[in-house]
Image 1 (cartoon, rainbow, N blue to C red):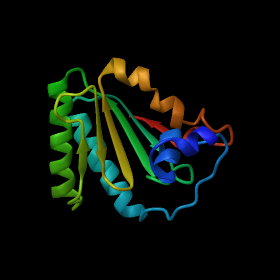
Image 2 (cartoon, helix red, strand yellow; image 1 turned 45 degrees about the vertical axis):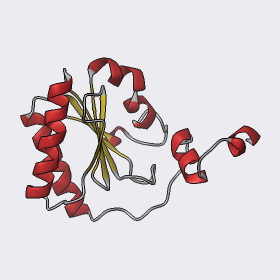
Image 3 (tube, helix red, strand yellow; image 1 turned 90 degrees about the vertical axis):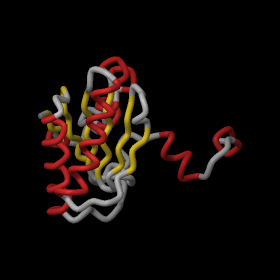
Image 4 (spheres, helix red, strand yellow; image 1 turned 120 degrees about the vertical axis):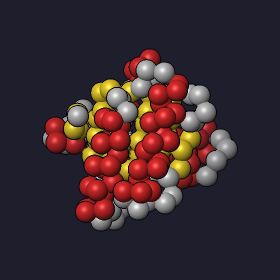
Length: 154
């Protein structure tokens, strides 16, 4: 604990970097259900149209303070992942009315993060997806009290 206090960054950044703690419940207002489901439908449809592989939707409600849903998908090459991110941004703007979509790593990276507010989308190359293991970190296996309903594979 003393070491964590000495490291750089705000307490919020430190907590986010540390990740969730087993059994910890996070309180936060849930996003408006209808808008969330509409955005999620646009995201999954866009990823499927762009031939994303292994699309997984994780329910983070009550488990994370930064989002209600996490979408994880795989693309084979940088160009495909960049195209998926660009198409997703355009479709969210046009079909779901979401104007503020933040994209990190879209200029040739193994991992692209798309922040849609209450939904966070991760696009990986296959090796990076296995390396970071977000499904293991945030999936139903993480919290023994969760049911298998928290993970949806498309």
